[in-house]
Image (cartoon, rainbow, N blue to C red; front, side, top):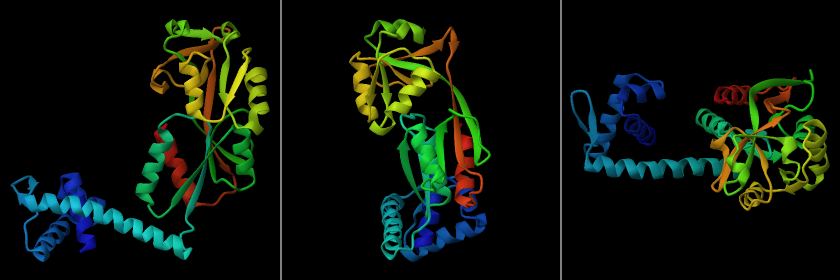
Length: 290
């Protein structure tokens, strides 16, 4: 009955016997027979069938809601049993640039989990160099990072997107009235950066020496703390994207350097000799989201 319940849930969720059959790789007639068999076992009608559509009966509504809970509990039971037995070694370790706020990673994780529900994704956040060190040492399988150095043949270097830097500033700040601001004009406004203590010097060097910022730097370890400083007008924080990436009480202002936009290249990096089906699938899903 468990498999029939999953069929029933798919039929209701997708609103179609044909779509549900395709999702489970069986024929439409087989799906219809399975639902009828489920109704026969229960001794009730779950669906009110029309010529080209169907609706849930009251019993069907009750069964649908309870089945969602039951299937979720069953999936949890299976995962925990495997974990306790030590058999669930299917893990993909993903590193993500600290402060990355795009939705692409979450969408890729959701798509990956739908395709391979038995594989656990472990996510680690870190600064640029920290993520490279973890990838190099084999502690991560794939990292979503920005490009700060020439590509190496030791890695698969997959360019995902090129985005402009914006400054997140307090909505109450006069800077919020600007459409864009040159970093030279922000030298008297503190630059708020996300970094662990051991990576602060590396981040300072990159933003000052490589990107050309002249501002005093305030470091935060957590994104929420950085946002709180921004909305209080304590400084500005570089973000990718525009107003879609800002938080409540903040605005995004395009950053320039000498009148030209400052660009950030996002890439997925894996070891060139990595041989994992999970890495290949996740990398392709991540590429599709950008």
